[in-house]
Image (cartoon, rainbow, N blue to C red; front, side, top):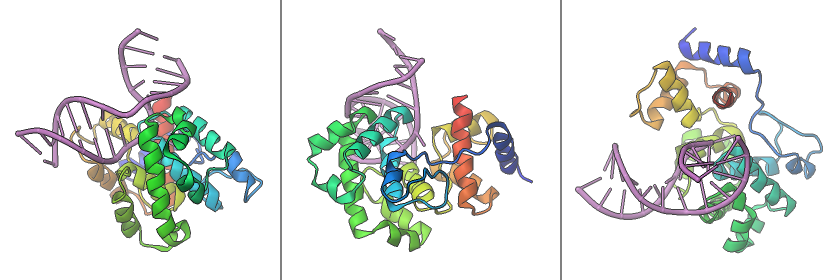
Length: 212
DNA sequence: CGCCAGGGCCTCA
DNA sequence: TGAGGCCATGGC
């Protein structure tokens, strides 16, 4: 039992199962009537909503992102073609609450263009590192956003490192300020089995821990 | 009122 | 490659 396993067990005992990524009830209407949380049985639309959410939550509180996602759902815009057809200023207005809306409107269009070429179903069958490289080549998608998409939408076994992860490991004294994203990610992935469900819960628990 | 959220890009050494 | 500026809303 290593210290990362112990950390997970402690957080799990404290906060319980988190069932991430949070998906809005609206996105469940189209393909599946029941609300679904956690790893299994997500619809295409829910996966797309997760991808949009991963971009919208960049340096932004989830509360503000949730409003934007609800607005997108109201207008039936969890849809690749509709996003691409929408004018930039219109899309910006819809996602306004998530902040940086001009940049994020552009990013949503970028990812939709990408998903036309590489549909989600196709990405799911591809190699993890291959997809990661493709995502990182998209302007507006950095390591955390790419890994969030890989883990929560595509269900690939990667560990997501965010500011909360850094803060917690810094507090534990396991990392240094200067340690890179990839170095921190490697610590987790070397210490833990390649289990998407475990990485999913672990990251969600770290966020929960930091909010309390 | 100021601070800062589940980042990432660009610029300039 | 690394530090600093920039993007922007809403909750507290």
